[in-house]
Length: 222
Image (cartoon, rainbow, N blue to C red; front, side):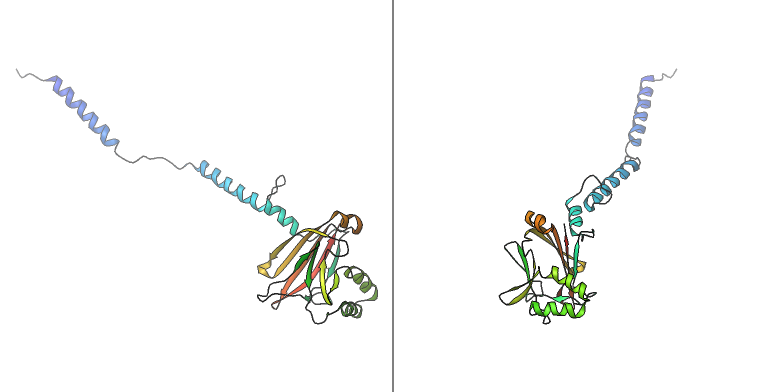
């Protein structure tokens, strides 16, 4: 009678099972993308972008948002705007530039000075006469009453001056816009200027026309 070695049979069975388990475990790990996590990451990135640009954020203003607010020209009822641009009788007033064509200015004693190189206006008398000749009398009178405070003769030369006649400038910022063709200067004025002259802020705008920087406007607000 043939004897069966049950111990060896059990051992072979165990070895076979172990081999199957090992073969099944050799493949790469499978799974699925966690779309919820991807969505969250995208939302966080979008939120950061919104915060930087200042969009849809009424509770917190980042530095870029504040700069945007500062760059805006006041349009309230108390603001005064002098228009020298192409839509006005002046058509823009040419200003001094350096050898690279950059706008030149100086800051001295709370004033920001720009030298006028426009050959039509070598003196204030010529400037005021031009305004009277091209504007109606009442409009010219009101215009020159304000312009007289910021068109100043210094050493025989005519300057456009922001901060003259007691409207001292305490600090200012300059913004280059529209591909480098517009310069907007935002000036904050002194407490004396606010109390005595009702000028707290001024916005001066220059535009490059045919390669020449020209004074376009001055806006004063309380």
